[in-house]
Length: 121
Image: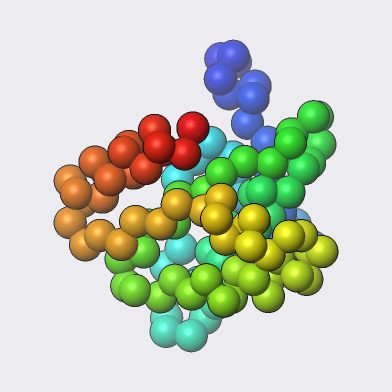
């Protein structure tokens, strides 16, 4: 097993039942695509992961950063605030920690994510 693979851990979806279905939560250091019918919870899941990824976890994980690739203009900072409140986290800090890229073209998206990640680091 590679050293990088050993560093992978799971991030809670905010739902114990969904975490069980996906093997303990969403995998870290990965790109996860959510797809499905209209109004099935894809955006809610994405917003919740923006918060839970910032929470400290097992094995010394101190919380991380999230890039939200918004191709459908569904991102709502006010939703992050209410989710952060649910987990008793600083709402404004959670919103500031999350870079967002609103891009429809793949090449522009990749370039913008790289630029944003360098600014945040």
